[in-house]
Image (tube, rainbow, N blue to C red; front, side, top):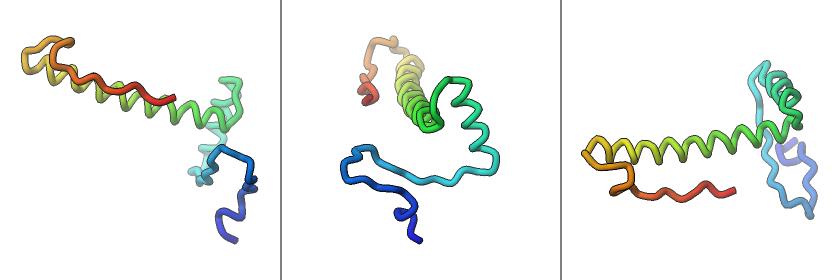
Length: 87
C-alpha cells in the first residue's frame, strides 16, 4: 500500500495532508497537551508549528538588532525590517 492510499483524499478538501511518524510516546504527549489546551491533536500540532516558525523569525530580527548594536548603532538605525510572518 502506498502512503497516499492510507489517507482519504477528497477533491473538495483544500487543506493539505501530511502523514508523519511520531517517536514512541510522543502521540500521548501531544494528546495530553491538546487536552490541556482544549484543542484537537491536529490543532495542537499546527499551533506548535506556527509558534516555532514565528519564533525563528523573531530570533532573526533580534539577531539583526544585536548586530547593529555591536557595531555601535542604535536599535532603530540601520536595522533591516524583516517581513511579518504570513498568517
